[in-house]
Length: 304
Image 1 (tube, helix red, strand yellow):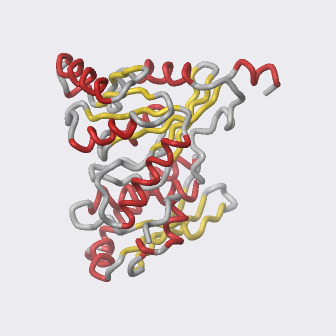
Image 2: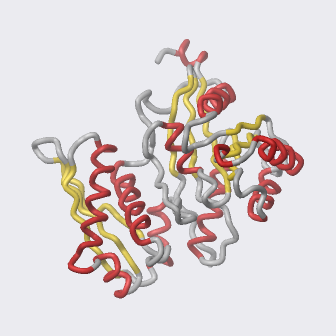
């Protein structure tokens, strides 16, 4: 890219802020056109600041998919919330994502109040509009606008794609002038090893969301590219108790086999090559209090 090109291009970061299950991860995946953030029915599954990247005309927009903001009690939860607001403070622009179906809950009201104190320009994004009457959407937008000043309001459905083109164009136009920060074909700055671990954690959560607590994590421990171009991947699922390890394994290993099969399909698609995935389950007591685990996930350390 020449210096002249740099003058006419734009690039910047947009922090996606919202309550758990507002649809931030689905929206990031829709905007980038691929899976860069895990999506489950269980709240608070995004832990680290996961960036997705898309191009809108001459602008490169880097989306920061922050953890859902909620009333935190445990150390891991507090770290997730602090990380979310840190992502907002470091961004060029903030997009406040609101589940239009749920409306302005207490959590959303708190987010709007705190977002209104930030220095960056803000946009309101009402998501899941396919589930809400237009009159309700207009009233919701007006009420949100009274709580925090927004530069623009977008009404979208991350699930169906409605309104996504307008959102992409608007965010692109709002980015500051400057050279692109990533290669044109890059859709995330998440290392492939970490993305693969996130994918497996998604499948684990989807399979066992009613049985397994939040205190489980996945690490990619080995990645080898074979002669035929495929990848041999080893991952370890860490839980805190032996009873949880048995749940993940399932009777005769059926559960972990199903998790591995589902994860392998998505990892192969993201890797654009075949993968051979081997999963192991280990007990690591109090892993969620280990500072090293926080650093690996890109989270601020818990309160001492």
